[in-house]
Image (cartoon, rainbow, N blue to C red; front, side, top):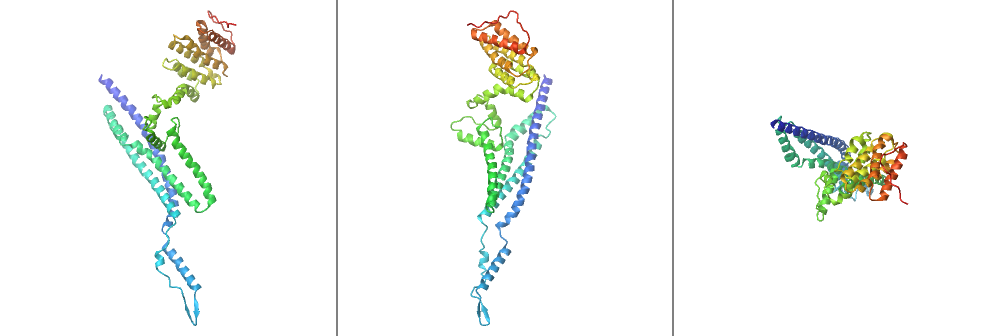
Length: 430
């Protein structure tokens, strides 16, 4: 008993360690990417700030020289000649004008405010990223050689540590800070260009507007549609905002994307259509992705034969696979999968044999009308299933005739002589 317990703790500790290593590795890769972007962006932003920040405080030497020259020019223009003396009717240069110099324009103030805010946001993201990386290094540091103690320490570090102290949320703030910095920089760039040249400003504003529109759409869409793949921290924040607004008439609140994803299979009515689609097409789309010739025999056949798997879903997956199969090696195994589906229907609905036969007809029709190169080896299970349906028959003569017609079409499609002993094909009544 003690050895079994130790083995259980060891397995648990090992699996948790693998999970934590993969999670921290993904987080560190994201942090490294953000640090590279923050470094490059901050360097480029600093170059712009160096050129513009001087506009906030004009050079007093240059400004004073310009005003003195202007005063001298004005005095020379009004000099009057009186005998051998020259005298000016203009007063000497007033020192009070030096202190009353005009300040920077509103445009320059806005540009510097936006760009320095962008620089602070970018550097803040880099600083927070470095600190979070230090936290992660401690989290995956060795705990104990005792597997039970290792599991307990992991609970302390993860559940009472990272999750309780909102480390994932802090990590999700980093890309938001960088995107905010980028938006501030582009806004300041538009203000600058509109003060310089309208043509350049118009072209740049159009391009920036397209980028802003992309940001808005990819932020709002995941919060509105559960199947949208644009999952991001800023989109999650938008989801929280929408949930807080709609909490008056909605009782479903999701703290993260995984909670929303799990709600699809939790019976939430809003996700009913989405749930039906994925359960109906999951196997067929997996077949498209894997493109493995053994998929039909090693995966599809046992899955559709499982009594807990809906026959409607099995039939739809078979029809979809047959429809999109165009080669001989893909066709191999479809016949046995169809027969397995029929057998599963029979086992689940023995009291209603007509339901089993109706579930068989559509996949077989698709099988016959497909572009697959059918041979007797693959078609034999379909022959057996159709012949069995013909032998037992149903209470509906039209259904019996349809099964017989499908069987005859299958014989012609395979182009081999075929006969079933003891199987009486029904005759269509006139």
